[in-house]
Length: 72
Image (cartoon, rainbow, N blue to C red):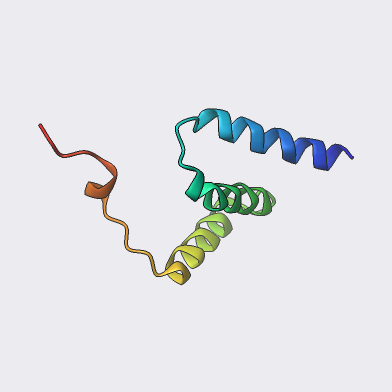
């Protein structure tokens, strides 16, 4: 039961950190939590490789200016 309790606690902590998150993105947040927990056993180079692989497979375009509001 401890692994399940730890995982539920991690989900709860993540939802508290991102308190203003949109409910339609909930599955993406949960996917990210699961992905992070699966790569914990890897060293840093393997983690970067796995993350890059998942990002390239998603075919989603991400630009830095999309993240930051450029309005003055």
